[in-house]
Amino acid sequence: MTEEYTFACPACEAEIAVNGEMRDAIVANGCPVCAVPVGPESFS
Ligand SMILES: [Zn+2]
Image (cartoon, rainbow, N blue to C red; front, side, top):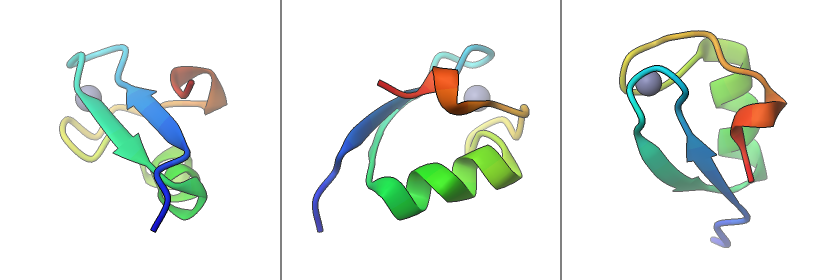
């Protein structure tokens, strides 16, 4: 599995390496750590 993006939560400052599928899930469901809603801008 390739980790294509780095998620950086604007609320809890968690940083998580994710692939495209996980990125889509986080955009849909929010931060996996604190559940704050996040958008595509929180990924690099
Ligand atoms: Zn968070």
